[in-house]
Image 1 (tube, rainbow, N blue to C red):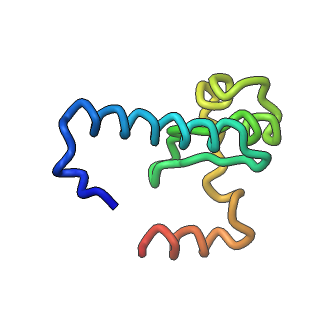
Image 2 (cartoon, one colour):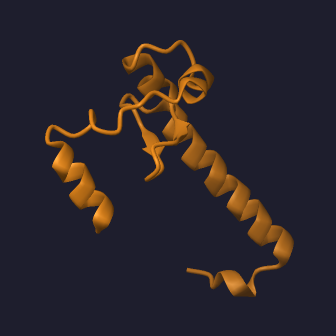
Length: 86
């Protein structure tokens, strides 16, 4: 494996772009819903599958709606609090 610090900056940037494209393709084409909700409840990112499962036509619709699922994503709301405190 090549040490990244030994690569010319343009090769490093090209490699980063390739990794980003692969990540994006996996994220956007996943058959499962993937999303991130910040600790304050703000939806920061979601894929189309997540939006569809939750009843939204697009990820932009889901992110614009910012639904309040704070206590609804955990069977036991106390688990969410414990999870956030770690």
